[in-house]
Amino acid sequence: MLNGTRRFGAMIIAAAIVVGACSSAAATPTAAPTDAPTAAPTTAPATDTPAAGSPTVAPTSAATFKCTGGSITVAGSTALQPLVDAAAKQYVKDCPTSGAVITVNGGGSGTGLSQVSAGSVNIGDSDVTAESKLQPADAAKLVDHIVARQGWIVVTNKDVTGVTNLTTQQNIDIWTGKITNWKDVGGVDMKIVLVFRPASSGTRATFKKLVLGNATEATGGQTLTEDSNGAVTTAVTKTNGAVSVIGFAYYNDPANKPLLNGLQLDGVDATVANMASGTYKLAADGHMYSNGQPDGLTQMFLLYMLTPAVQGTLIPSLSYAPVVK
View 1 (cartoon, rainbow, N blue to C red):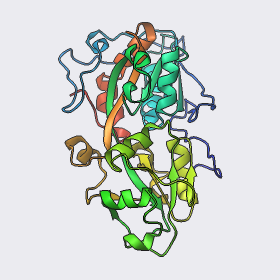
View 2 (cartoon, rainbow, N blue to C red; view 1 turned 180 degrees about the horizontal axis):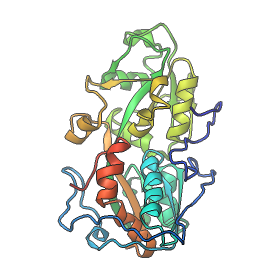
View 3 (tube, rainbow, N blue to C red; view 1 turned 90 degrees about the vertical axis):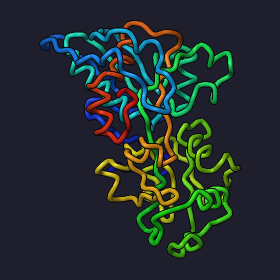
View 4 (cartoon, rainbow, N blue to C red; view 1 turned 45 degrees about the vertical axis):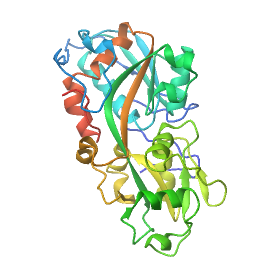
């Protein structure tokens, strides 16, 4: 389990990649050995289409994948980061003679979008569309590559007993400060501590839109702010009465799940199956943006995200849903 007090460090998902879960954190690149035998992943069929409800994937998906070398940096959404980390590691394994170096950082959706727009990274990961975070001119130059469907779950500290489900209205009342004690939603007599993400966070924006109906959130009082899904996860496990929202990949991690209470939303279990069917509403597409049409390793890594090696293997293993059938 992760260590730390407030401003906790990011969770390391893949041993070969050091995750940079905030904009100031460094990440160790994943590099392919140059003396290993050649091996290439299976390419997704040209007829593959996005999952129902997902926008059309960018034209890059129609190209043919091939192992390609080079060096790229990916940054942004920490909800999407476990998948991108694992895919970078697997790309290197499947393309061992390419010499590819893929560095994966976090920082949040807003940071990833700003950095790819500015040209400081090759790919910006985001839980939300570029149009929702950037000025129209900056958003217009980015190309959206949808690589997964992802879900989030409301979690509490283990000492919050008696609560297994929150309705949409109860969530609104809690996060706007109307309800401040767990006893008011059937739980123990304990103050509620809200653990927020920064305003730039895609996780926060998604929860605010889909569950809170864009209601104005509480400020001051019993609140904390943490800058990544990993830091939020640790904060909730360490803070009595805490509640927050984290990605499925973080909740289902064997190191985290025993330390958290995962809640239903409107009586619906937070599962990949319910997310994929549309029954569970706290879900959104996972976007990887390039600045214009990508080429070189940027293009090939984005294509790799749509191959069966990722869509059929990594995605279900990490609690996401595929966009390529």
